[in-house]
Length: 251
Image (cartoon, rainbow, N blue to C red; front, side, top):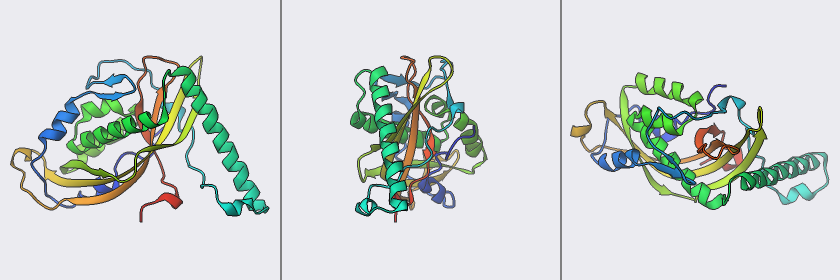
């Protein structure tokens, strides 16, 4: 299955037309070289480590239901349908949360969301800098081919930086499903809400970057993380993203 919504965020896309940059690349380089930790699973830049991927299983959910509204309590055909969908989604969330807690000892939502945002930041830095080796360690294989082609075909690399977290990363959905054999896959959708700054730079010019205008953008994304929860050695990786619901889009 093709990657769903590759990480070509609005900040990166908007910078492609301008050639400008800053010199503070040593911080990004240090963070890219360091291992990303997501619940005890250290991800080093190594491509020789075999891992079981189940990315062809597809997304377990492609949208987030509308939030509960007081008007839904008014008995109409539409409100009944919305209530039924909302209750069904919440029951699936509870079941999936219990499944994760059963297989993953000590798993908690808030610490996971914070760690997931850090991995998301590292992925953005790697994509901006064209670091395909690191992308291979944190992204689903179904994404990597397209990401590599985009990096190869573009004229610029980028300097990416998170300016601030506008609202803390939070889990908006959890889904678990059993695949062939005794394997159970878990997918967690995390809402990212940040201000990001991106500057385009000519390839090969990083050592002589001139300070220029950088574009800061409000970015909100729903990022999907996945792992095989029945495999104790399988780490979380970035699977893709789903569309931001209309009621939660940035202005």
